[in-house]
Image 1 (cartoon, one colour):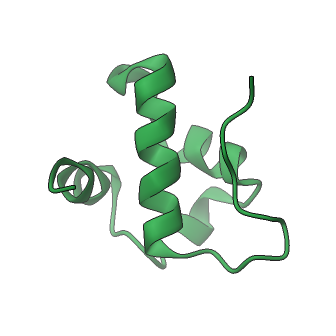
Image 2 (spheres, rainbow, N blue to C red):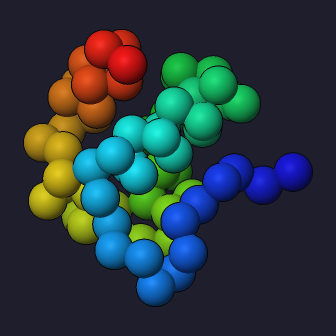
Image 3 (tube, rainbow, N blue to C red):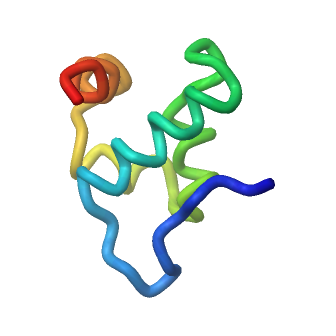
Length: 66
């Protein structure tokens, strides 16, 4: 079973990144979550994520507020 990802032609968004991060953490555990693994899941370069979230800590904080 694969993770839910936005279509390849869909623009990257903060909400999409957060949803994918939550799903990745739910499936593989919080310790398995990394910016690089998240980027691979979303089929983008890791640096692309930093336009939407400052770092993994911000990503975790935003995810915990949902």
